[in-house]
Image (cartoon, rainbow over all chains, first blue to last red; front, top):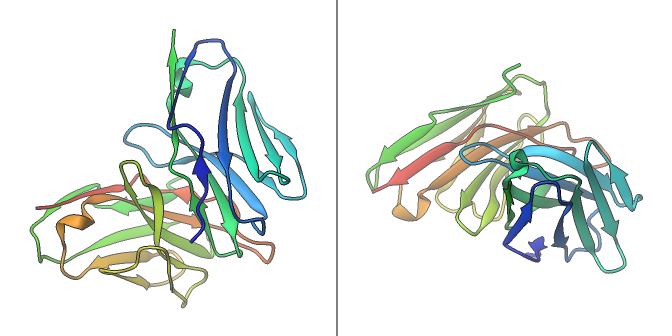
Length: 111
Length: 115
């Protein structure tokens, strides 16, 4: 089946920088997207979501951008902190049944 | 504020043994899910239950069975464990409505090793 993919498996940034994590999806019928954060030894935690009728949504220090033309999703983290170090997954909803997850990007923040 | 509770947290099985992974949620969610997570593979859907009384196969259902015991509980059973089933298993729940699936709440995972 079609899966959500991520452009880079790892991303290293300095504390205080802005981070951008990218994700490409292949199913143009997907109508709901989520970003999750997973810290070592824990289950994924919800960060932010966006529906296909929007192209941008902002949370606290995070912004999700959706470009349906090129089927691209990104997560922007402002003023990245060491506590942001984790694996980040994007997920899409196909056919309203269950979320399909990408392979994840490991974000490393150095101080 | 328990959310989604998975038991056990760790388990070692011998090839051919059986076991059941338990999952319970206290958020009155309709939908529940089982995923497995392997290095470099992300999370892959094993089975899901859109509502009490229904279950459906996901991407990787072979070697597993599930039971939606009631609205709160969704168990995953390995009838004859194989080394390829060594993985971290996550249960999740969500309030899925007519407009689709909403964000999941995940449990903390069960780390299973089959030797």
